[in-house]
Length: 584
Image (cartoon, rainbow, N blue to C red; front, side):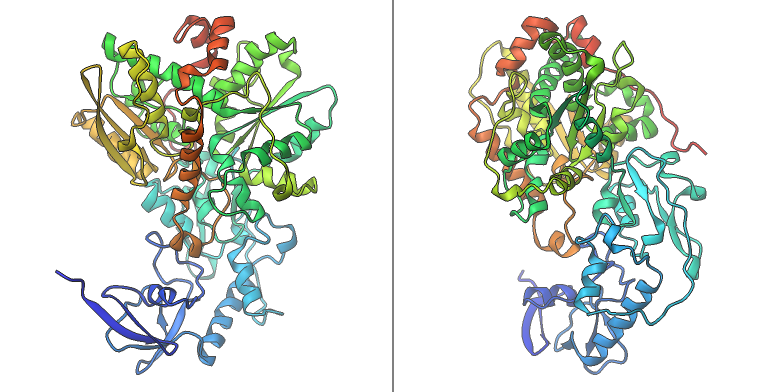
């Protein structure tokens, strides 16, 4: 049956669209850009901000284009004098209760409100009056919440409730005193927030941002007595270029490494090496569970937002979690043990910085479980992709014009398997490559497990290894994780291996990645472009199986003995316990 279409005219242009299409979508199809603030495609389509109002001939008042459906014969005006004046009034009212500190705001230059003020040539604010002062919430290690800058668009609420199904924030109070807050107006640090950071990615202004720690990094870089090492996650190289105007999905690995060396780090290493070690340990753990009757399904533990979620919501299922530390924590432990011993460096004088796409890593690195037997943190600082970009800009480095360079040895070697860790399904695929060789005792030619690839929130598949059928599932986004956990909890699930990433799409869409506008998110498949970058790195890699990484082999020979050994467990594994949702 053919799809029913409707014909309408927008700003003198005729357009035919499927029935049910909104006026906003119809206008965008013919290149007409209607301004929005609260709109976030498929997530927050409520028409609250009223910036997207338009005129429809024959109707009284304005229509809200993000929710008004196109109808046959409609004649729409998106830029009439009355519409423009009404939008200016709406914008003026929003700005009247907004701080005028754009020059010092972390979102300056990438703020949707600021862009609209420039677009409508706002020179002054007409509706000046009283402003409500809110206390800034900066108690968590990951997120700063500045309600003074909030414009009540509710995009963060919808993302937290609908996508992640957490509901850590909501709108409280009424009228002029309305604001976005938490249970009993407590800090995000004391409620059921997982620090996934998807609220930050959704926020159009500077009301939510990561807790910046780059000043601490600068201090250590300027200290001649501190040996400063930096490691970069796979997803960072697929997105860092966006902060400098490069196309989405550009592989900026070489320029990123050069920039880090220019900043003054003593060594620049690749977290992919840590990912390879994680895969070897995780695959060994999986094989042990399968062959010795261990707890199944085994669930990955590399996403700290996910780990915090299961600790709070499904503590009875914690035995299903892999005991492996996440790649950057594992790598930090390797640097302060194996590498320190090999290079003759005092671990107490080491300062390990992880550049991550994830703000939950800031929370993870300060967990008590992530310290060695001497009380030293495996990782001393976590900065996001955005924070690294700020450091590069502060240092007056022209990123786009940089020559490419490679990671330092001997810890810079990594495989294609380590690279795909950054996208949903990548951990699963990398682990299966190693698990199949371990179970069969052969180096098999099968490399790609494409059944666990793609943008779907849940990907189920059955793979056959050595005559055994293994049911696997990869889920990204905590809302999808909830569905899988309920299946496991009820006993209905028949999975042996489960991969869960807190962020929809995996690390490439993490809360510390470059923030794209709502229009870009609606029109561009950002996830696919970044994921394609990582898969391209994998395909071009000489070695595509983690256990074949020469650096990993050498570390086992010289220090960790073998996968799953007592020494490997001492440094590379951990455990988790029940966590209360609310500390109030």
